Image (cartoon, rainbow over all chains, first blue to last red; front, side, top):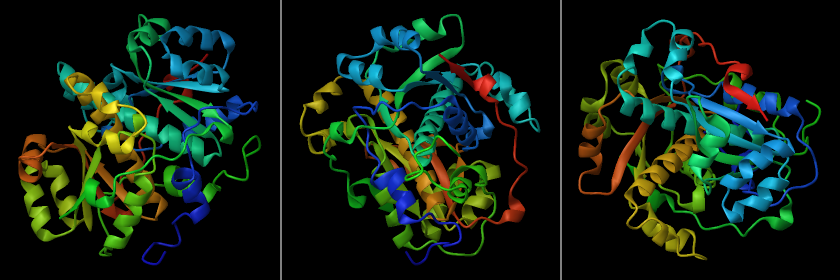
Length: 201
Length: 201
């Protein structure tokens, strides 16, 4: 495409991997995802921008049958079988005391004090920024050749009780990772046109 | 890297463009961003996953001096000059009646009824999914060779009043787009280690 910074812009094949041909997966190939790939994913995710570098996103990578068993009672019926079959299920979580890390993450200002005593701002900031980081996780996984299956159909209280009791972490959403089974992908659903979703000012 | 699906995985240069070398920008080159590039960004953003394809994200692309003037009174002092200098400022918004589009976007189930009468679920779904779409916007812009400058330091009520009075749209966050001035980039801040931010189950 003309008008682009061609030194940096990705080619069409990379855009297809990230966006146009990537599909939410409902079935998985029997092909493992090594921990080294999960480490590479996190190394990319952590570089994505968050407000004041607050980085509230936390990630539980569930790879073992024991971990899947802990998660299973929280899942909706429609999400159970595909989650059991996925090589990895990530709980994208938020640390509700993320601001305790700000002296380390944003050392040039007293950013911690912006949040202490402001629970509504803590909640909004944790939710917005951990969600951004959840999107970075999906983009990073796709960039490394994996497929994603994000889900919000689950019982939050049960996930929090099973994984985060006694901690300051809370679940945001869940995402299966692995190599998808193309035969289980649904038809592509319609999208809103630019006219419906955008304004030009 | 071994263990990856090399047919699909992006190369190191593309990962640098998206994640490892991309930086939040505070100054901008005098280089315009044509509307054709904004259209290409939206064409990528709209393909990213949202729960039940609900697609609540809405985007106001501000390119004109008049649009910037409308936005200026809402900005914090530290965000004003760089936003005035940016070729494009995007208001990432959420449509609080996104569910009215579900008969079109998710036609095989009565998904609209999952939301009517559940304002807390509407709010959570709109916020989570419009934030995911805001992250897709930043990744899409970077993928097309642009730089981003996301901000949450602004007066939400003023943005909503100036741009969305009488509508069901609400601001989520704001993001400058353009070609950054490398001399204005701050030093890279530290990130949490995998040990601090992740659990392996």
